[in-house]
Image (cartoon, rainbow, N blue to C red):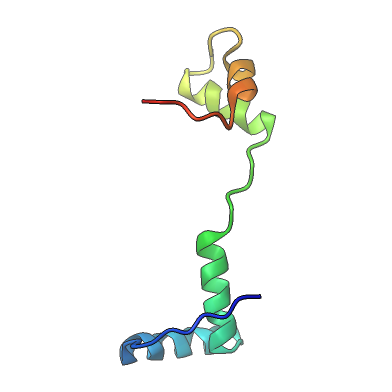
Length: 81
């Protein structure tokens, strides 16, 4: 595991961190780990059913034939704008 030192943290930020940690019943170190994990956790992958629901919503309930299959087939590819 890596270690991270934070210097020059403003007192008001440290105070707010201390209060939040106490409110959540954990140490300040654990509070910072939780904040970082929540902010930078990878987004969960969408299930095919979620993709289908989103496509239906985008097209007002009637997506063009093959739209969901095309999306699923090409997901993860980089597209140039």
